Length: 180
Image 1 (spheres, rainbow, N blue to C red):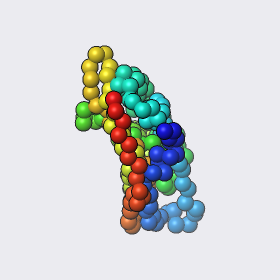
Image 2: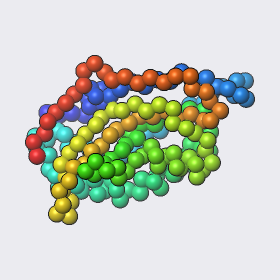
Image 3: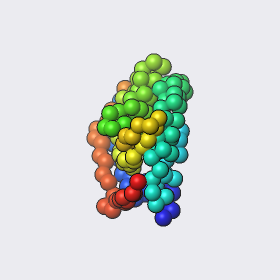
């Protein structure tokens, strides 16, 4: 079975929307919007195309993700976005990675800390969950479960009013049990 990232997101993705209005001084000029893929940094979906999951390979990928200096990458992206000062920022691949149920890496929280350090006045207005994948892993002789929550999110500058947000899943979602 061959699955592309697009196939998985199409099947398990969600739609998020926000009714956004601009208040204060922005009412007299155009609203700017930015979009940014946060970039997981390690291949993940190819692990789902095999008939059996290799826990050692999953463990190696998880270790590589942890070593990929996510907080520094998110701080750099936040600084770039803050310098541009768009009213609305849409981000993709806002991953939350867990080891045995404990959060280890949270791209959205790291991006928010980056906004604060860069002087960006942004708040999270909406989050849309996408793929939610749990895989067995083994690294340095230790076995554990790794869970990846892929999320898209909207951030708005503090002078932007958000009247309402909504997120819903597609009627049909993909599910696959992998032995391993």
